[in-house]
Length: 301
Image 1 (cartoon, rainbow, N blue to C red):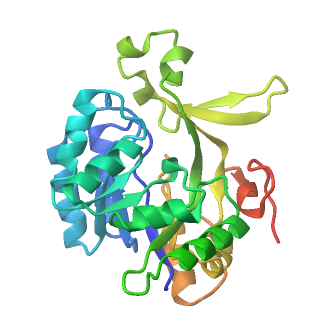
Image 2 (spheres, helix red, strand yellow; image 1 turned 90 degrees about the horizontal axis):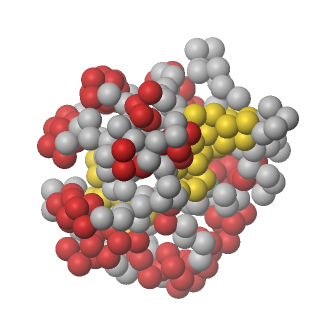
Image 3 (tube, helix red, strand yellow; image 1 turned 45 degrees about the vertical axis):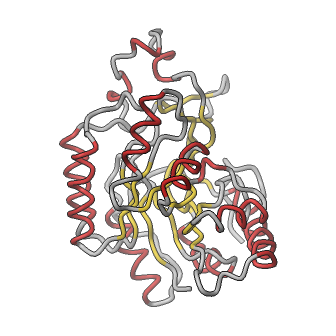
């Protein structure tokens, strides 16, 4: 399958204006699939569902496939009710919580499995495939060899030629590592989660955490823990394709990612190695997980 580009939902608490401006730019970029919605915290209400649906319509008119994302940790009845409503809007959804899988299956809504579902086994993938799974994202901590083995196991169990299963690899952005019921952003400000007053809107790219030796370790983003360095597999997109994936998943950052998406698309179209554009955001990079070494490391092959 030809390699394509997908855009993960914005992980951070951005203002409504910033989100509208961001997705207006996305309509002009060579992105095949766009995931929309709040995936971290239900208290982030800068945009309502109707706002997301308005953005979805514009992206659809621009030729993008639109998928509605949901929370990675569903804890309240109100969040379940919203999930059901999202499943009834005529779009596929991205299930980031297992309860979303159950709701989508009950309502007959096609779904994609987000990276937070932690699919590590071919049997799990086969089970979800028979429940109307359209595609999935490899957990970020798995390697390229893990992907090949998992897909080989899946193909032994399922004949998916009539309905191919898309596979995405998290290829750029601050890697999603873990989720917790505790809000780390609120805790960092010494306030209770229930009275956080959405303080995370002050942090456009999360809060960077350092070790006692002053080495950057993680960044906290509400209930989510991310990598400190930007995970970057774009120079290895051809290797990712050989391992069986057909989508490169890009996660938005505070810096403008338009140049790298344009350059990546050109590399794919011409089957060339990705060359970092001169105006790419200046970030520290890592890529260890893909090469089966500690994730914070940066290496090449």
